[in-house]
Amino acid sequence: MSSENMLAVHFDKPGGPENLYLKEVAKPSPVESEVLLKVAASALNRADLLQRQGQYPPPPGASSILGLEASGHIAALGPACQGHWKIGDPVMVLLPGGGQAQYVTVPEGLLMPIPAGLTLSQAAAIPEAWLTAFQLLHLLGSSGVGTAAIQLARMAGAIPLVTAGSQHKLQMAEKLGAAAGFNYKEEDFSKATLKFTKGAGVNLILDCIGGSYWEKNVNCLALDGRWVLYGLMGGNDINGPLLSKLLFKRGSLITTLLRSRDEKYKQMLVEAFTKQILPHFSTESPQRLVPVLDRVYPVTAIQEAHAYMESNKNVGKIVLELPQ
Figure: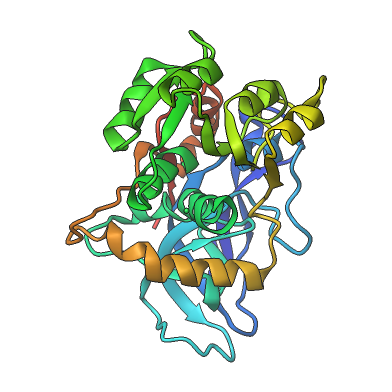
């Protein structure tokens, strides 16, 4: 392979994991205020699965290569870079795409330093989930998204309740600080939530499911509560009196996506997160936050990694390591 090219995850047509393979493509070059990152690891996200299936195209101008987050070392600085970064620095980054390749270009304002004591694989598991959780809790709600949100909610003094589909996931959630967990396959989580809160309901719901859970969400929402919708894994159709029930609760329904946000917003989010939260990932922090890794695959096992995420068995992040 020439020095002008790199390996990247690729698919020729939408479909299943079997369509994925590594392809030699042109290496990107940083333009003004960008750096070139040599990728060490990139975590897998639901958006990657949707994009592979042809359901979630990248935002205009973004790379069509999969990968919304990455860690690695700075390989080159583009013109007009103003920051304190230098070649060789270890960093992690949130991306609109392109992370599952040996190199990716990044606006310098979106780079984050890797906290002391973390491996590059652990660092790759932070940007998308933790910035999303930080945005949902601190910017929209009042701070994988689930494992991140539990720890951030505890740090903010809130009482996190969770719902999941297996005892293993609930045990992990409680280990991370959830006050209680309810198995949605075995019980009505809205009734269990109301029982736990003595009928008051919850002040904030972080929901990546959507359509199939709307009634349960409204039922356990407290008066003047906020319901933040950031995904539609349970469909986008509503059949029933959502508006009247929400109005009765004086509830707020807030929707958000992070991938399609503009660079200015992401830079503001990264800056706030870097100051307020990132120091707590250090092994020296007394109030330590932990990125939860489920499995680490070499990128050559990309098909297996996608199939594993689709099985919905993972607790925490699935990370892909790039050849160095």
